[in-house]
Length: 308
Ligand code: RIB
Image 1: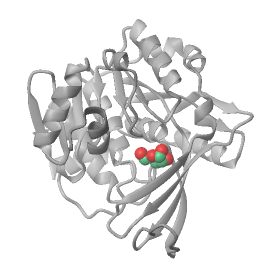
Image 2 (image 1 turned 90 degrees about the horizontal axis):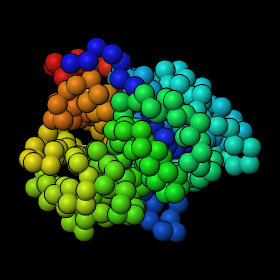
Image 3 (image 1 turned 135 degrees about the horizontal axis):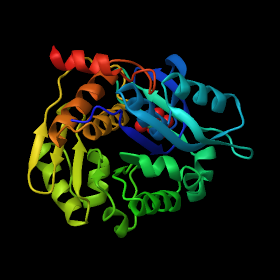
């Protein structure tokens, strides 16, 4: 097993989350009262970068924020979590991305997302970080950047012979040749269903979806299943990794936390299943707290949870 700190690059979104805690979600046309309102740094890319850094990775991020208060708060927060933000550009023309998130009494959420500066990230932003990418153990992307940018960064990382992890979120169908460059595809139930047409509700249906995704060319598929853990498929066999139950406060960023912790564990030399177990522990801990980057556990917290 490697003793070097894994080098992880995340090319992805950076948002400020506007979080409203409600007893239940409003129906169309209805007004409901929020019990609590907080602003929390989020964005799938930034959450994954923070999770990988707190899990022990040496993490650099590529992305954009606006020249505004949300942007500087997001950058400062990433720095405080140990993420190298030198690859993040301040876009002069677009606001920092944001998400309006309602969290209900059961900890489930509903999100509305505005890309803002995330929508301005271009493949050339990554080319400026080519040295860092060429040293990376893992390059992680999601679908909150323009698809053309995702494809451009994947092509660059692939030419440099790097391992590529894609979280196809929010659910969107990419061009079929993207799958062939993906070492680790990590969808949740909804994303797996959009990509395969299979209704994913449990480990069995997740296994069928994973088989279909492997046929498209991905080398490994991990379907995250919320409180049911994750289904890991290495191209030959599938393993269900269960999750421990805890009281759910807010499920926001649980999948992002899984991805950050999983990628570090894998780059350290753990097996796919062990890395998924580490990721599940991190994700489970994250649902016990409100908010995206406010809920991500440290490596010490993950290891002590796994020992309990
Ligand atoms: O995955 C959770 C994230 O999705 C939130 O932090 C929000 O910003 C959206 O990007």
